[in-house]
Structures are given as structure tokens and as C-alpha cells.
Length: 109
Image: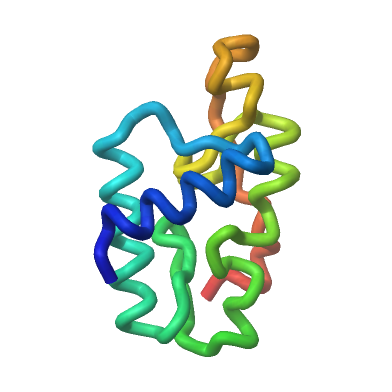
């Protein structure tokens, strides 16, 4: 999968929802490369900042965009791995802050 095409596709679909890529372009492309690697490894784009087990049903909560992205964006202005940021953070209306792990401990392998 071409990283630049993935970037453009995700940028377009997410910006329509007022969700933006992190302003750190190097970080964004590093995370996108990891998503593609996980797609090749597991068959799905598991979050690169969490440990996937390789079982799609057990990992469905961390398939990007993960189940935790929306609450992270709402509360902190960014998702756990920092790939996506909110409109407010994109517009510098709020400051970036640490985003804690929301995934329940029993799902972490």
C-alpha cells in the first residue's frame, strides 16, 4: 500500500469529520507506515501504539481508528498514539496534553 495514497485518503475522509492529522508530519508518516506493516502482518491496521494479538475479533477495539479515538479527541484533543487531533487542537484553541491508555487491562496482551 502506498503511504502517500493512504495519507491522502485518510486526510480527506477524516477532515470531513473535523478530525485532523497531527501537525508533526514525520510522526504521522511513521505511524502510517506502522499501520501498513500491521496490515501486512495481521490482515488489519491495528493501532501501532498498542500490542495486537493477531486475532481480529480480540483486536477489533484497536483497529484504526480505534474505539478510543473519539473519547480521546473529545477529552484530550488527540488520540492515544497522536495520529489524529481535534479541530480545537488543530486551531490551537487548546494545548496538547498526555493521553492515557483507555484500553481495559484485560484486553492488553
